Length: 116
Length: 223
Image (cartoon, rainbow over all chains, first blue to last red; front, side, top):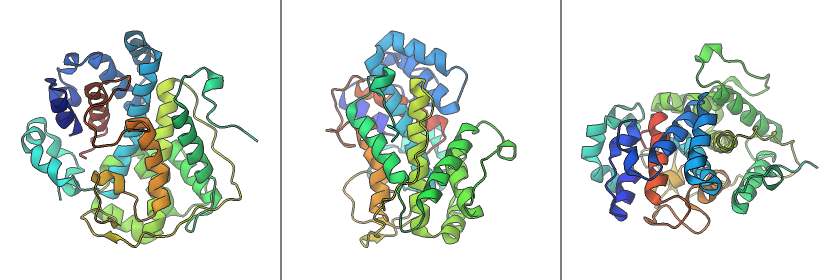
């Protein structure tokens, strides 16, 4: 959800479908490498070493470490949201009606409580 | 005395504030609280780590280290670590009734913190940090009295000016501080907040949010 708001802030046309595994990540610099890295880390995939190497070669070590931090903390944030049943913030709920419907996010199990 | 998270010695250029947050988490983890002994808190972390490491296995195929934790505590730690997307209100109510609301809050904050710190190790390509030994310190478990039912599974501080997720563990402020101390430095950086829409870190905001959103999506996390 935050992707939509922050992308507006920098006037960049990011296709939200990329977050769901579809095309569009190429519109963000190193987007394909970032998505592959985040997927491999989250799934515990054997592809992680290769994904890390591709991202490092694209963005360098310092940016790789920042990407590692963000991907890692979101693996804690999702557990926090799911374990506590945190409701979606009202402003974000109102602003994302169409994109949630279009991407099928409303079908996630956690939507039952998060949507209130 | 073992030095945990010695990133510079391993050749990783990790920001100092991240290293300090991870060390602080381990120190807090190794301390007793009003709801768990230090040994129990470390066992929660150990169970969470084992569950998350086997998240791609069916639940009945996973192996766990021996533990003195109650069945309800084991169920909570393992589920939050490996199967969080399956959690619903009925499950949460059952667990909070069995272990206690505040104890559940502390448990969940430990599991989420360990998941994030372990994921960071994996992302860098380093081994998981050795879990700490119990220390003689005590975590303040004073409950927050300014909480209300906001529609979550747990009472949370109300009112709250920031995104809802940042008050997830606010029933026990030290638990909230343990996890969100890591969020502050790993996601937003020490001088940035959730609500800033433009930043100047190595990753652009669109890059960071694309990565974060993809991680959330793979986890099937609605929030």
